[in-house]
Image (cartoon, rainbow, N blue to C red):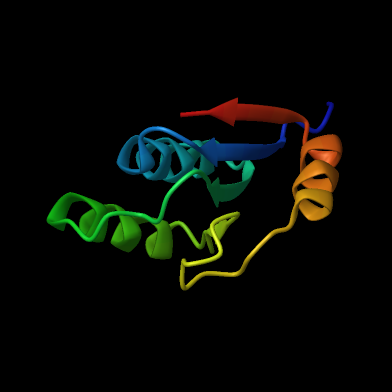
Length: 92
């Protein structure tokens, strides 16, 4: 039997809440998920707070390319490396 666990890099570019929902959902199938927020800081909304709770339950520690964000920051080199090493890259 082949290993069906995949490494997924999910880029939260346009819809941060949806990106968090999808990231958490992918872990149900046993995939390793890395979530990177892009373009703007994550808005301080009730919906996003709920999704951050889901990320915590799914053991996903989000990262960001936005310098103003209070999350681990990825520069362009680190983001490129993450994209090259992932089995799949998804964007939301």
